[in-house]
Amino acid sequence: MDGAASFFGSFCHNIPSICDSALLRVFLVIVSLLCADIEALQVTGGSVTVEQGGTAILSCYVTGTNDDLTQITWQRKTREKPHNDNFLTILPREGVQFVNGVPPFTNIKDNLPTLGTEEVLFATCTAAGSKPPAEVRWLTGALGDKVRTTTNSTQYDNDTTTTVSSLFGVPTREINGHQVQCVISGGSLSTDRSLSFTIQIYFSPTEVNISVISEDSFECVTEAKPNANFIWSRSGQSLLESAVKVDGAKLQLLSLTSDLNGLYQCEASNTYGSKRGQLYVHVASGSCSAAWALLGVLIFLSIVGAAVWYFYKHEDQRHRFALFWQRVPTNESAGDSAAQQEQRQTEELPSDLDLSTNQ
Image 1 (tube, rainbow, N blue to C red):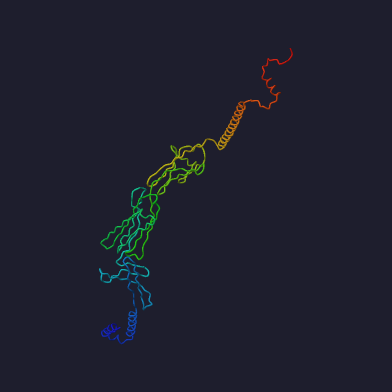
Image 2: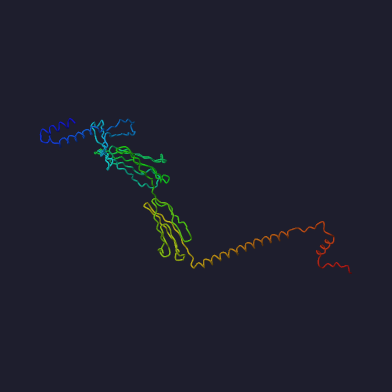
């Protein structure tokens, strides 16, 4: 307030006519109120002590005013820079603005590894243009020692740093599909930034098989990464568009006629290669009635064959029984009567022997 009085004393000395006016008195009252408000406004913080590598939370409190804040600015002073240096500004609309600091540009690049037995680079995680340098690390979860990482940093003339962390491993089917995370922390980031990444192992189509969906529908089946594209063709001839329907890996025969006979091929391909599967189609000439007639003949032949087999089996059994009966010895039993023995002896005599008693 003393400074304000000195200022207006000098002002009145130069322009005395104004000093006697009521306007001057009002002006002095306004300045006095403003000065009193400035002296009442206070900004307080506090001291925080943390271990190296830990997180420090700095607080800032504004008291002595009910006005809306239009800007908050943080300053710092270090041993290398002993003077106060603005490094963070918070604005109502723009949000957090880094002063003399650059948040890193982060991304993950897939190296598109293919199936193999040697170690290759899976992906790289980059935090570019960070000031101060950011920390980049991988969280690999259950993969454990199946993967390894390396980290390199490059500092530029504008005091920004680019940090690149690489993920290596053997590209096997077992490791395909596992999810890992790249975590960027430190630097000018207020919180850690996590980027998810799924390891993808790429390979050409494996063995191509053609499965039967129904009597007139077939499907080409294979495994590939990325997914394979399918092309159906007929060896030596073109596909009859009016008689077949192709839907990706599926082939449907719309009319079962002999015109469809032939060798069909299914080619599965992607960026890394291609393979083929074959299907031979043979449709007998004639209508469905011919097919039913053929089925009837087959059933008739089956019945005849069964009957012959049954007759042969039982005839063979009867023949064996007759042979067995003929081989049974005809020993006389002790209990035969004398009359029966005499009759048997008579039947065994020669036919020209006369047994009559007449002379």
